Length: 142
View (cartoon, rainbow, N blue to C red):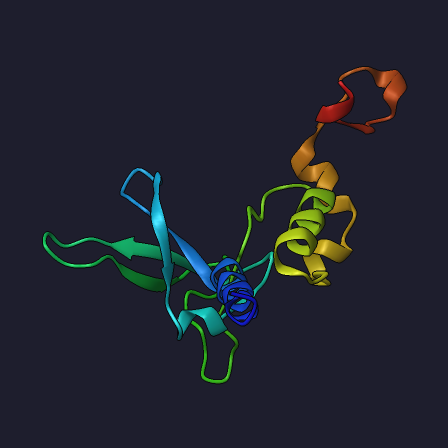
């Protein structure tokens, strides 16, 4: 049994690091799938694609990578890297960084993670009192 343990550990690690949660049409997780070509797609907190599943009766779920728009362009040009977000990219920086480190063992250094003001825009409210000088208060502090 000691010879199979390293194999099992490697197998579980590959599933955890490269598996995709298969979700139904209502985004309820129904399983985990390994898709070798999509497992090579890198993470970005500002992705240019999203992963979705297509279901046909009697067939296995099919994973699709769909290009997203960012307001500037709706296409990915030849040579551009296709990226997806491994996590909830709308979460605050500290939450994203912790999850990426804990689950995927890397530190994201994208422009969104390097812009600390981004958290104020998504995770805070502007105080209506004039004495606040327009400062934002984090929702967690309210």
